[in-house]
Amino acid sequence: AYANFSTSNLQGTIQNNLGDIQLANASAQVNLAYSGFLGNDFNDTSNYANFFKQGINGVAFDLGGTYRFKEANSDKYIVSAGLSVKNIGGMSYKDDTNTSIDYNLNVGNFPTLDLNQFESATSLTEVEEILSQPQNAQFFQKTKTSASFKVKLPTTINAYADFKLTHKFYATA
Image 1 (cartoon, rainbow, N blue to C red):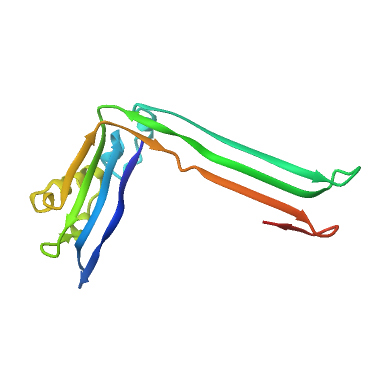
Image 2: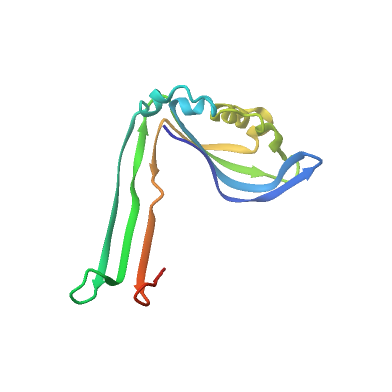
C-alpha cells in the first residue's frame, strides 16, 4: 500500500493572522496518490491484511562490499573500507482502487487559499474532496489522473573507512 501528498517547486507566502492561516502568491506542482485502503483513513490500523492486496509489483535490491588491508601475517587490519548502495528499484501499483492526481497550484494575492480547511482531514480522499470544492478548484488545476503509478525507492549510498592509528585506536569516517 502507498500514500503520498507532495509538492515540488513551491513558492509562496503563508500568512498567519491569529490562527487564520492563508496561502498567497503561490505556485507549485502537487501530487496526491494513494493505493486502495490507505486513501480512506490515516488512523485505521485494523486492516493490515489488505496492505499487500493492492496490485503491487516491483523489484528492489541492495549492493555492497567491504575491503580490508591487513597487517602481514595477522588477522588485524590497517584499513577497512566499505561501500553500499541501498534501495535500488521501485514498485508499480495497478488496481482500480488506486488514485494518482497531479495538480498545478496557482494562488494570487486575492483570494487566498485557506489552509485551515485541511486541518481536520483524516484521509487522502477527504483532501481530494477539499481540493475539488468550488472555492478551491480555482487554485488547483488537474493536469493528470491515473489509476496506476510507479514509485521509485529512496536509493542511498553509504561509505565508510576505518583506519588503524595505534595498536588500540582506530579512526572511522
